[in-house]
Amino acid sequence: MKTLERLFEGFLWQSRFIVLLAVVASLVSSVILFVIATIDVGSLVVKTVSYSLGAHGGEGYDTFHSDIVSHVITAIDDYLLATVLLIFALGLYELFISKIDQAEENAAHSSRILLIKTLDDLKDRLAKVILMILIVTFFKNVIHTQFNNPLNILYLGFGILLVAVALYFTNKSGHHGE
Image (cartoon, rainbow, N blue to C red; front, top):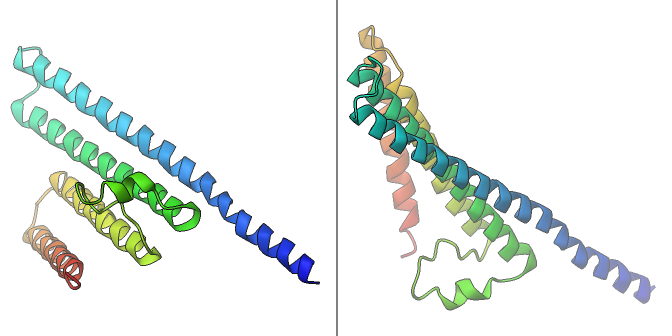
């Protein structure tokens, strides 16, 4: 019976490597988003240079500006999501597979954001980046909102207040143990 128990426990322990599927998929997704966002920024550079040289085809500055700002915010959103996926991949690997030796060795000289020691560390780091994605999405939507009546402006103010409160509590929770 003891042999069967050891075999089963060994199987259970080795089953943690299934997490590598999520690690690799998250890492690949992160790279894809980084590439897509960078290509979008490159196309914005081309569009801006083209517009500056007079090849705007009658497009007004306000339309051009709105389009550029919207694309920049979308790129920021993509970069943040790619960062979430990267942190998620590194965190899952450290929690289930092995500590990343290079991260531990360079911890004194670099950011500690990628050092994940517990599931709560992973959750806290992901929550902060996801909050930033929501804030960016909020402002992206604000850009396209028409303020036809005073109630829309009040909603905008309330939304900004909620964002400020969320940032306040996120910042406060990040310093409780320091």
